Image (cartoon, rainbow, N blue to C red; front, side, top):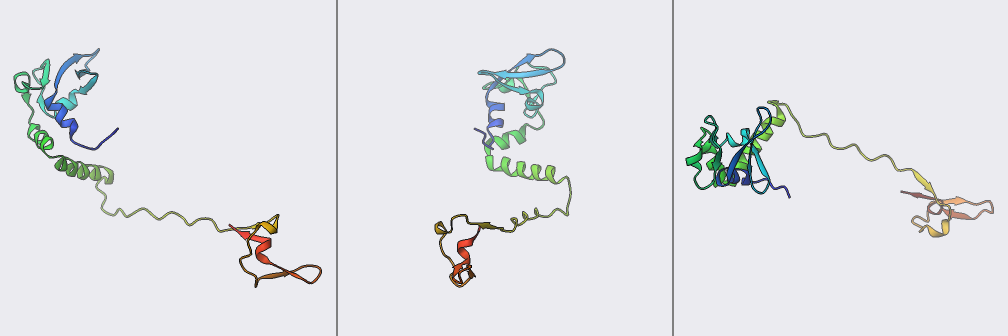
Length: 151
């Protein structure tokens, strides 16, 4: 269940993360059960220059120094509404790519015109307009609504 909230920042700082060395230059951070963070995630809250083995949790400062962006992370932990406000502003900027002449989407096109449908059994069709009549070969008339039904 995906929810747009500040739990990412809470987990980043309040949970204890252990550094995992992966093949090549990749480093991941793990906490049980099975959640991971990348260096780019961890660097929002912690200074990783000293290549610490653990960050976050109760003794966060004993394992990792705070990153320059840590005060912003702490603000987002305290205020979900601030995080949502900043996220919406950043997402809008990203989507608009600095364009100032954007307009609302064009309304969808109208539906295709209705076409008459021939009724094969006029007895099952309700009579809707008795004034529109068509002549039968014997001189009597039938309502047009028995012959055509507009869908």
